[in-house]
Image (cartoon, rainbow, N blue to C red; front, side, top):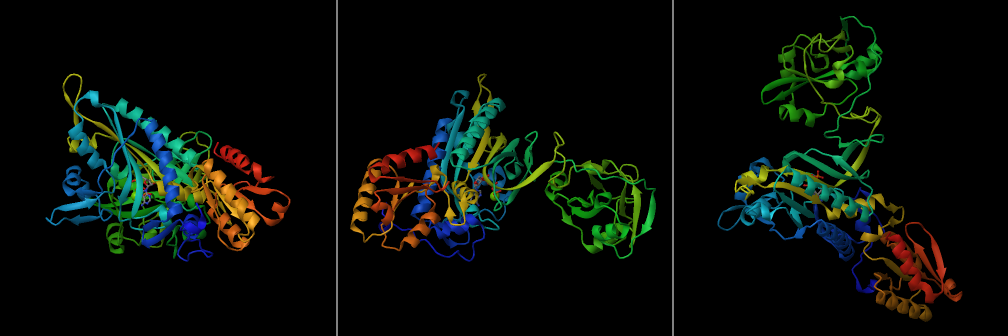
Amino acid sequence: MRWTRSLIPTLKEDPAEAEAVSHRLMVRAGLVRQLAAGIYVYLPLGQRVLDKVNAVIREEMNRIGGQEITMPVLHPAELWQQTGRWSAIGDEMFRLKDRGKREMCLGMTHEEVIGWLAAREVRSYRDLPQTWYQIQVKLRDEARPKSGVLRTREFLMKDSYTLDRDEAGLEKSYQLHKEAYCRIFERCGLAFHVVESDPGIMGGAGAHEFMAPSEAGEDEVALCDRCDYSANVELASSRPRPPEFPDWNLEEIPTPNAGTIEQVCALLRIDPALTIKSLLLVTKEGPLLALVRGDQQLHEKKLAMLVGEVRPAHRDEILMHLGAEAGSIGPVGTTLPTIADESLRTGRYVVGANKDGFHVRGVVPGTHFQPRWADIHHARSGDGCPRCDADLRIERVIEVGNIFKLGTKYSVSLKAMYLNEAGEERPIVMGSYGIGPARIAAAAIEQHHDQQGIIWPEAIAPYQLHLLPVNMRDEKMMELAEALYAQLQAERVEVLYDDRAERPGVKFKDADLLGLPLRVTIGSHALKEGVVELKVRRTGEEFRVPPSEVVSKAKSLLSNLLK
Ligand code: ATP
Ligand code: MG
């Protein structure tokens, strides 16, 4: 492609609103433009990247027996009402009415449509298993669209769905997907972790996420380098290291003006791990006291999984139920239902005395009060691995893919049944699998860039080779550039030919910004010496070869880069 014939609006300056590296570079390199919050136009280079990613995804999906289909974006409400998600999902769903006042929504995922289809088209065990996939637009009114194309309200998703006779079949389909996903991310040049995740609103029996390490991510994972334990911190368990417990007797001690853990610890000169943080929360059933160690954080999601949604109690509720201000409340002597974190099973602690300005020292959980035990703390780096007790590491990541064992939740509600060998009706066992091609592209940029710009992994680069003659007014140079352009194209190398009459500095800057894997520079001096320069963007390696060898050298460098 000739630069002068294309739309590649590069920018010299960073866009003001962009924080994430990928956002900044995708705008500057002329890949995307934002139309409105979380809504993007993909310009030609951005589109080429998406096409590349999608090609990799298609190959790997077809390889595990996936069959591509296209489902509608516009869905009738009834389908979602049947599965209960019409009411379970809140503002994230775009809803609308058609001219006949029928309620509709825009597809944020396609389990409902798959269930509908399976209910009609799958009859007997002989029709199973099936793997259906599509690469198509999803619409979600995200609360916080951010970081460029990492979280948008309209985005492309490859979603696939497996239909099986039984759990064993699902397990097989699930494993195949897991392997296909690993190949997809490897081929796209991403470093990633496969971690256990919370099935959340999907329901079902198990789930994994594919997480690309990056500071721009919104998720965190807990990793153990010794035994390979890995989980989203939303459900990761951990063993907080126990402190040295002093030999305290049970006694009430004055703690005037000390309302926070830090203030109490400063006053008593003790480690926060020797205190208990008591939090009064309110569930549908009423008040509840939640306890975590003073140096830990309560994990509200874990707690919500046990007791449903919670909210912090108001000041007057705290005073009414415990008779003291928030900073002096504790579990001793109260009849409120109490949940204590597992890490409090051993040791003696300082807790609020339910009397303003006082704490109790030497409290032994399980002896001086009887809680329900549960894991309700946030895993932290340095905590013990729940499997092997080695130190856990917490890493920030971008979720690029997600796989779920759905089981029969959707097939039962949508009546997607099949007849087994004995002629009995059974619900189809389903799996659901998603990947965001734009997130892959953005995550790849987050992981592969430098001060100057993007460093594309070869498989998803918009073009493979950047042909850069430094001076378009030099006739000899032009002639050579045109000839190389023609030869490279004849050899099916994807070339971006910078035929602009720009200053060399501008062209070099843009080449680094776009980050194509290989740059072929035709410079004035080198040309006099009878050589052309090839430079690998990723390593900075340079090769000088005579014009006649450029094409073969470029091809061999590119094929090595693709390995
Ligand atoms: P997140 O927790 O980041 O909101 P999700 O769990 O809602 O993701 P899924 O519904 O499992 O995501 O979607 C599958 C894949 O689609 C994700 O792994 C991600 O790659 C992509 N994806 C999800 N939401 C968005 C979005 N708002 N913008 C871009 N890509 C997205
Ligand atoms: Mg989401």
